[in-house]
Image (cartoon, rainbow, N blue to C red):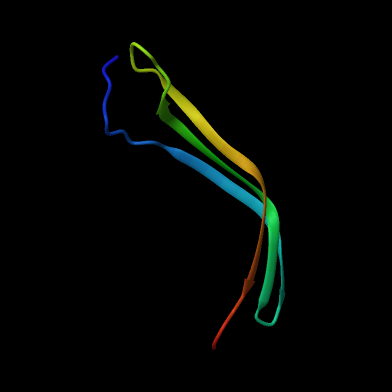
Length: 67
């Protein structure tokens, strides 16, 4: 198959989590997954599309400033 420098990569992702908020302070945690289809050219002599996935737990802390 021919190789190309430009490709459109379909993506499917989602997350599930919980958020705890007290006034301007927020803590979130959960699990997130992102799947990219045909994102990598894994071939050596010829093009070979491969999928890539990123997934795992996440956590974030935020503090609002201002109104």
